[in-house]
Length: 564
Image (cartoon, rainbow, N blue to C red; front, side, top):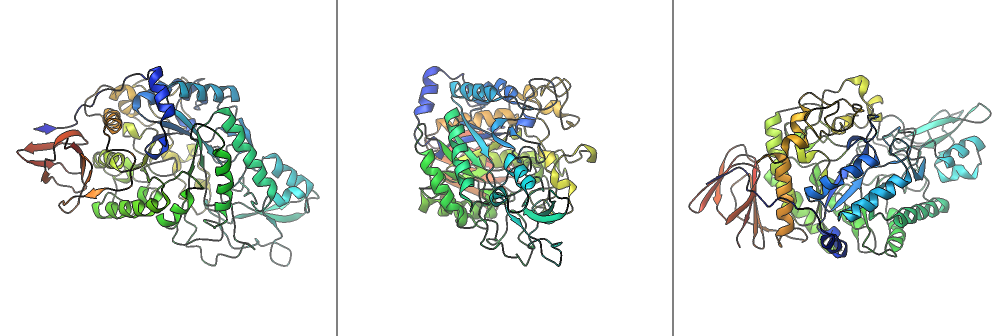
């Protein structure tokens, strides 16, 4: 029997009783599938070319029917948008380009009515240089109490003309900018591990902690279900801000703890935050964006009295290779088990090249790739990688558009790029715009259903054929594979939460594991392989030929079986 993709039951609209069941489900975050929305690029309700909260709200039924549990929103706060909203000027206001606080309230309420939870981004490592604190710090000059809430330092050299230390920005160039004082003279320097428009907070100052505890309560009172913490490994800097000495560790995912990343002091902050979160009903959660040297250090962030989840960037950075994948799966599960936290699995987000393009290229090129590669190969591997990810124990993250099999747009004209790292000399490659192009909803239209007024980044030719409209109801399409996989994942008692897999014997280049009555086989090779036919096929990302007790799994294909 040949199977391209077995048909799982189509999702049905959520009833009131189903919504109530979702709301009551304990420890929902341990096996949740969380969908990341990048607000600029999801849906535009007013035709200005920029996505907004009302656009997201209008598409919530799509996300409900896709089968996800929660929606994580990248920043929509008031911001000059020097780094796409990760430079926050007011943490309690919505930027007008996205709407108003009333729109945020309506979005949260509608999501809850559909059985979806809302997680919002929190950016505590740095503010915008347009934040009221920072503007006053500049205006009041040296000695201002407001300067103590950031890292202002005198420069080195005879006239203070050199930065206070040798740290470099993740976006390239020095991590320090010298200010012009109110009297017009060159003055102190301030620290910014990212863009100059993003000055780092000084978390040693009590006012910073007080402010963020208040911000947490503001959004929890609004009804959000949790926070994704941006640069959760930052915030605390080593005492005295010592020189790094070597700049090999300026990458986000380095090999050692640095004076500015993954300092142990961050954990005291999270223990305080957890006390606040636990005061609220409904099992609100924290998710850490913590780029740490090892998955073992990532586990420190999810100890029982700290955060609930942490992104598994080691898994994201692993190429499509069975041995490498098995090693990181084992290491992840072994690290999370002692702290009682769920593993998380993620393949794409707003900062890395989409995995349909990463897997289209040779291994070893990193997570930001400028080449399209073999599009057919990339999509085949991406689909297989998705089914593997969704079969692993724990929680999974889906980045908007990956359910459509979208590739990165690698040929954007230089004049339309907006990634701040692109305009600096070193640091991140600066090509994150390629994964942020607005997603297509329809075959036709000025922006393929994104909105009525074009899109803030140009969509490539052929985008409409990858749209939701083009793929809906089409057997074997990537969108229908995601819908079916998420439906099966809900139905299978052995899928979702857990902390272990039982590895099964398999040919070289193949991963095979059992979880109760469920079996997953992922062929990462470029050729068909024969494995036992473990039972009834639930879903497959590619072709499977079954004869007698044997199944031939096509190249770069993942298959789910049930033995029940």
